[in-house]
Image (cartoon, rainbow, N blue to C red; front, side):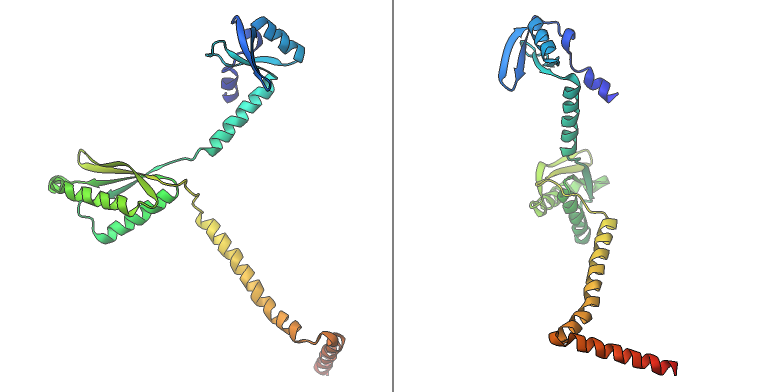
Length: 235
């Protein structure tokens, strides 16, 4: 279905029914009658593809249509891969939020912004607590100030009904959050490497202590001791 939609976006060859077209290529562009452009395409064994129908005259390329569609799909895929999915995370406060709760929510908001997400923080006024709207505004401004290293204010605190909103956007592109499974796997690999180093240390020490010119003698002594122990055990 997607391929069909892409095909229907462009007119080719005899579907192009204007008087003249602008041919663009590596050597620049030139305006020619559409009939001549079609003849040029036939001679080169390619297609006349209309890439900008709203231009005056319409802009076309001499290219194999299948190759052209492939290039378009590839370009769309690359653009989609570059797009960062931005989510809006909500942080809710009360007009009299205590310090511990404030710090807890501040920590989460910082993580959201570092991951590239936006943050919508708001103070919810229940009943007569709307009388403390100035206190809520001060809270949100403090929140924005504490996050100024990782976030920028998109809109200042504003009251909408019983809620006062503050919008923050990340200052830098987000970094992908590593899953707990990936972190555990990396920790296990590091632990295994450390254990291997510990196991190899005594052997390396022994090799260092052994005289370089006495290797054969040392090996012979070890073999003799092993043979003696084996004989004693058999008796």
